[in-house]
Length: 213
Length: 178
Image 1 (cartoon, rainbow over the protein chains, first blue to last red):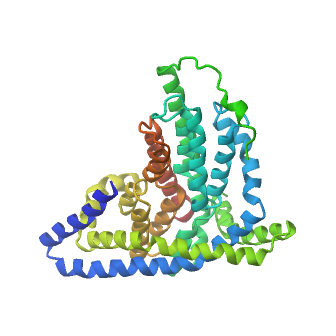
Image 2 (cartoon, one colour):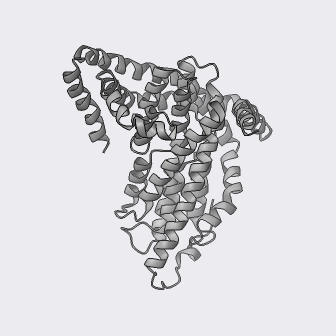
Image 3 (tube, one colour):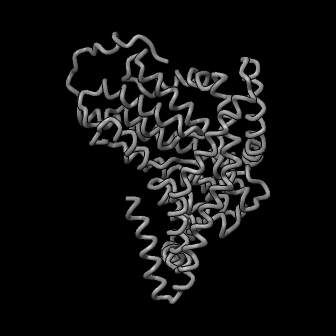
């Protein structure tokens, strides 16, 4: 998909330039584009270095676990079919709290661990379980408190107030996440109605799983 | 009311976090400065790692814009977007956002560069880019890691919530900045 899009931009640009006769502008755009890519990244360094430093302090202080604990009633509500005390819940909470703090690098491994645990509860190993779909919905809309990358880019282009988009982004991301949860619930209920699950013998995995995080 | 609340949130969120976290950590006996420096090292690596993909996407988008193809594409949808009062310049960003993280970041950067960070389009681009994640990438990574082939309705939920996020970003920007 990404390959097609990338190729589309290049080829469509070339074809249109042939018709409009702007081929020299296109040649120039190749180099300015590459330069912009690098300068933007260099502009990101200052903010990312500082922010990840602050976030490491948060991690070392156990703030991630703290947020995870606060999320536990929400997680219990969002994942009704995961047995209480199942390790999946702990990973889901860690995944969500890392997302909230904007720690993509920490969120992904936690999310994958959570998926692996959910896979153990999944009767059909090739088809996503409803709980997996919910976890995915949470991650694709991912609430983030501070959009650091965008603040850095705005700073580089001389914004009078680079952080003024924090509030609008937070509101938009909360709405997107709420939407994701509601749509997921709707599909989950509809799917359950259309495909009644045959009764499964009580799983033994909740007894062998001693504790969540 | 809503406007002043959101503006207040924007001004206070960062300073509050930056004071609260080290202070909290200090009382939890964390060597705050050393911890900071240790974590900050990751920031450098993270940024360096995105240079190749951002350069690739930035070139493709620059070519697309310089050739006039962008204006052509945006021009097609303009009548419809004008009717609902949305600047059609942000549409490609909405389409790219769920598919490619680097591509949409490059596109948002391009919009900020073209129209200025403090223009309505620049602010919308920032909000759209920051408010959702790259659905298709997340789906591939998470389901790929555990061998799920059939995602059921997961893709639909992800894309619909991206649409909601896109609309919400535009609406909130109008409310606050227009």
